[in-house]
Length: 289
Image (cartoon, rainbow, N blue to C red):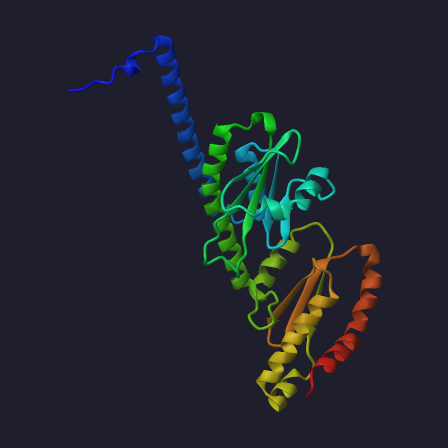
């Protein structure tokens, strides 16, 4: 029988240091596992967590200075677009998002190390060939192999977190979207009303229906009626502000709501009075009936 005596050659102090280091690594991994489990529970059950909030969670968990999430042409970040770091990253975004795994960039900044990681989006959540990239920025003096290993392991957990949020947002869109017009539906209208009436800001509510729509439907058929409803939804989205919410309540009934400054309410009312004429011209220019 052969014995390996090399493990006994070190001094008691060296052996103690090795054991302490191994215990420290094990303790850190156990803490990371517990943190991952708690994160999964939090993101799964807290429906208010979207990708923007998840980006803030990434900063807190990794200890990085800044984080940027590149998704569907948007950039979610704790940095402001006018920040020089943001601008520098933006100018290099194509080069940063070429890798298939964790990629480290040490030469972009004098005192910052940049790490970029592509999120593995499940096929159920993918729309075409979309990809999500997480870009993290750390103080260069603090980055070592242990930090890189931690980021790599955390991003595996983050893959799950991102897919949870995307799945939830996709499900909400399906539940709250009218399939014909792609506007928000009555279910979304009910939840929106509950929210805005509890909010202190002033708001407007506008109800809209189509005159003689039943006659058009009966005369020209449901296909033409559907086209009118779709064109109505498209037109309403185009004439109201981006942050206003447009709904199809059912049939030919629509609603719009949004914030309003009481001091400019008279101007808003004047605009509403011209909508009927604008809509008639826009609709008849596109539909041949």
